[in-house]
Amino acid sequence: MTTETFTTPGQGIWTCPAGVSSLQREMWGAGGGGGGNSVTSDGAGGGAGGGYGRNDALTVSAGNLYTYFIGTAGVGVTSLDGTTGGDTWWIDATTYKVPGGPFGGVRVANGGAGGTAILTSNAAFVGTFTLKTSGGNGGNGVNNNSGGGGGGGGSGGDTTSGSAGGVGTAGTGGAGGVAGTTNGGIGGVGGSGTANGIAPVSGNGGGGGGSGEGVVKGGDGTVGKIILTYTIVAPTTSPGGLHHIPQGIGDTGEGARVPQTLHPIESGITA
Image (tube, rainbow, N blue to C red):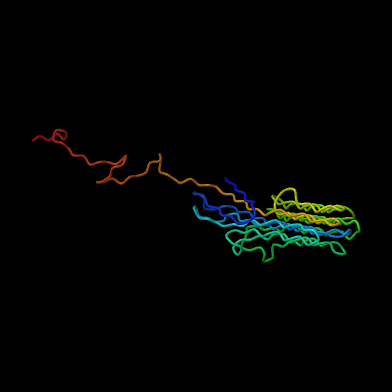
């Protein structure tokens, strides 16, 4: 069994190895960035986690080239909304695609709103999957003069969806959302007091935490991911590794049978 993991943001090309005709492919969208702040009150919202999609027996052809795209992480910004996490796709964005997580909102009078994760029923999931799960929502920033940012949502996993980030409380950022089981990414923690929101510390596709109060920024989300798992089947040969070679005039290779000319003495024929 061979496993290949791709986490570099942007477009790439995978060449199908010889002996591979089917594989399992897993994809995660990138996490959304947390919202920022520019005043000394209230916290900003956390970014939502990216979605997940899996195909258990995807047909491929040895030697063919397959284009893919790894979603770029959403960015936390000072005094503004974060940016949405990038989608991850296979072949192109109209064939197989899982969405990134929406951004966390900038601080407003009642605290910034956390990003709302995209549900698996949404058209942003493109193509037919064996299984798909959604990321978790970003947590809301608290409405308080000592604002705490909302936590980022976790990304979806191969069994369960990611969970929502925690809501900020007075002076304390909300907890990051729990990663979907298994292989999902955790969300980032919201900023406490006057701290920036925090990016997730592990996994892929988790949302960034929203900022605390003051001139501070939200945490970045994490990039998307693709995992390919497959078995290489060796070509079959005849017993002993020998192959039949047609015999006849003109055969010259090893194992070829060359026609013999019988001399009279060897054949027992006398003149």
